[in-house]
Length: 556
Image (cartoon, rainbow, N blue to C red; front, side, top):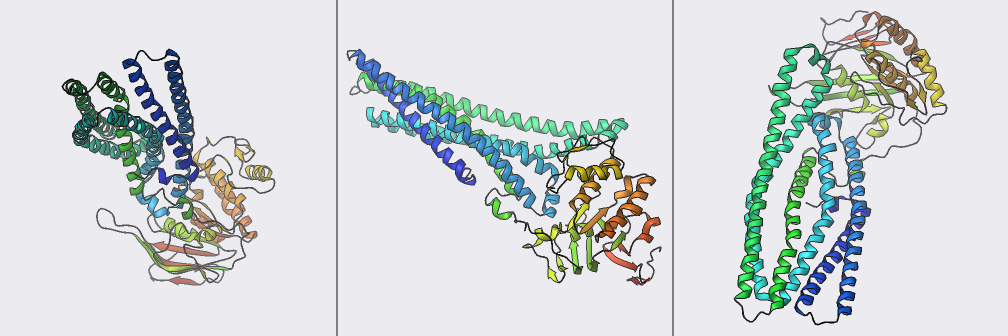
């Protein structure tokens, strides 16, 4: 499954070293087997030679095995760490539209469940090599004893392996079903944690959720997992039965061949008994590699390929942002995929201009496209048609990361980090503390070393912390999506009449999505959206109104 080649060079070197150490350990194991068999059949040899030879082979095996295990441990930790870093970088590099289409539960399952299985499979690669080395060494020894019997044993093992493979196919299918069910279960767990208040308040909803969602998914997961284990157990039992039949058949075969000496007979029996553990180790390793293969397929289905991750992350120019004057949307459209009923929401085509130092209110009903417009403006969504131009320069995939640096935003579904990540400005704690006083949070939260003392606050207080973070970013354009919706009248007054004018006085451009029409007079322009279409625009400075439909009006 090309797992090794997905890893960085350092991990591949560790894997190669662990595999080589495993091969050496396997060779010493085969040597010990041959030495013990020779000693049993030649008891008259020098005792000193026997002790020295046995000690040398034993020490070599122990040292090689210990070296393989130490290298294996380093390899495992390197692998899991690098897989987590790569996958996290790839998730960040993946377009937001694709991540939203995939869904948070699948992403969480990939970052937790799938990465763990891939790492576990990577850990078993050197163990696999060690078992193969033991089998190869024993095969060479058995071929030296009698190549005819070796051919018969090989044919028997191949036929048994084919039967084993047929039996485990069903186990593989059930493992695949179980993995799909985990995605569903992650989604239900998210509903459990995020909807806990609603579930506690409504007993009927709570019982239905537990019975129809959690119980159904966990039962399906239990059923598929048990079925997979059941079929794999049948396959294992079948392989063990064949193995003991092989030993019995070998004993009879060697007895029926008068040209074979006692050393060959005991050698074959000892070798077959010795390789039982490596053979079962290989068979027990199959579910791990099969599960890892499913995990890799899930990663690829997610659109997050583990190959070439670093090349997909666009490097951001560390230079300070240049001054700007206007941001133009020219014929910009963005459409969501069609839903189950064949409907799709379309934003645009929009012709719209943002100018430096403006305060603009974006208004409209729910589902009118306000939040989608915000994501298109900030570069989180790429226009499907039309262009966005910053001072005449078109925004493309090549310069989108630099374009995003112009924006600070507080979304309606914002996430509050527990520290001021990525902010390295001078006197960060002091600046944050001053904003905490202005936002009347100084008694609730402290900032030390850029970290918040707590984020266990009300939704309104958390939004004020998110607002403070945006202010500290000090970027040219600010976007606020229904920021005041969770604030009481006192904080709304602070936001609209003190903080927005302060930003504007600093030359910032501010776009505010809001239903608070009592504050619209503070803006320079008011833009109204309806069904994804720019229906009207009022310039508060000139009083000029642009309307696409005469029946649409905005209260001034």
